Length: 397
Image (cartoon, rainbow, N blue to C red):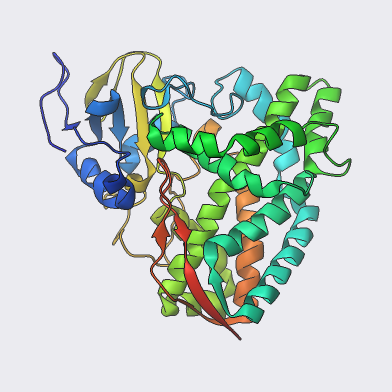
């Protein structure tokens, strides 16, 4: 990467490297952090997109949905398979759909599901303590793929294919490169499962999915929109949640002192998750499209320009956070941008926090020591910063 003059009257730093190369994926905080320090806005030469990696500039973009639309062409790829509802719609469609779905996803509405999450978490911790060691990614995935689809009311058979489905969706939020093409090929079974098993006739009558379909009966959304909402909630609640919880376990297991603080003071559990989301956001980038000529961080942008908000960079911006490269469960980490900000804040964040609290609370109650037994292996995905393997060992309290 290097700094250069810009196009005609627009002058700006330019990054020439491939942000989706293996080297960049293996060191996202290094690569994106260096771009952040080049300036509030950097031109990604290979992808004809802007990179915004400083916290305040990124927050300003999120805060202005009229100027910065969620209807994007991620990194120049016109083949995006991102769900077309809620994630990418603008007002008024987004406003209508979000107003319809949010009461269903409100904490009070989901309270009944928390008992099921807690019961599944206890079973998972029972098994983990019996075995004494395991892989935090597989441990977390086992919990999420059971507890969350149960809440939705989805069929049990075939849920394992959701892992490849989620990886394909996440990869496609980056470039349509060889990694994405390979992920899509692996995920054919997962896409077929989602298409068939999320249909209304397949879901249980007492699950969250049926409550979403009931919105169509009430005339709040169309039948097609209800189906897309079910798929959107599914996509929002499992893959990045698995990555975030796995990262939390990895960082707590890496530092016994941090784990001891959480174990001995359960009030720190929620804060530890916020710190995880700041320190290692499951999503590396969030995309926006410029709707009118404007300026960000002193750089002129044109209508139609594409923006990549660098969450791996904003979460460790020294202008916002003291000692940003240190994981500290006592840090006041509220204010990170991992779940977005404003009208497009992540609709699945309540579910993600419920799942995290259920599993980590069970661990904190019953696990005395937790430590890594090997180095965590990065997830090789275009837009994640999580781990695919986290070997760890536990001992009962």
